[in-house]
Image (cartoon, rainbow, N blue to C red; front, side):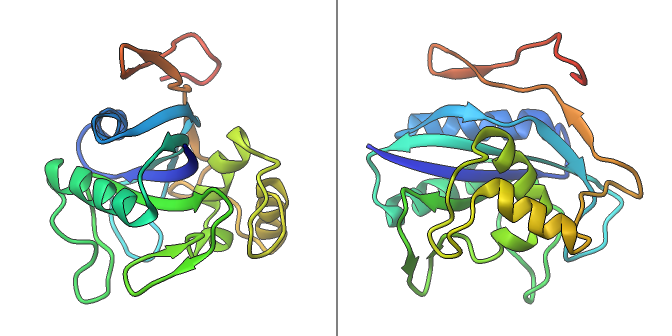
Length: 191
């Protein structure tokens, strides 16, 4: 089995349910969640929208190859209503976005897939939840841990922002019940 980290984002509709639904759909395709970060609310990056994102990162196990994992994430996005990654190279609002961050310690560059994800070090909305669940995970390209990468980004002024304020933190969703994800309530900051 391979260990993979996936990033999730949603800024339309019931964002929390979209993320949890994506996790459930991936489980039916052989991608089993082991841990999911808190969900954080942030402003869109790379485009303007009044719709804030919920973002999370999960640790999963799978027997799928990297290419088959990409197909599973894209199938999940399509089944949930996403039809395109961008329009003319410009990002836009989306029901769900799933990115492969890491696949074991593999580095891979193909026309359709780059692992590790090429923008990890630039995205606090990915690094913060990654550092929450795997602060010691070492990036195979930079040699830095997730916590070190987040600290470096914050030192450059790349702190999380959500419409001009600190990000909202939604409670952790880590309970697995019969193959589906449940939510645990009662934690500080749980919505």
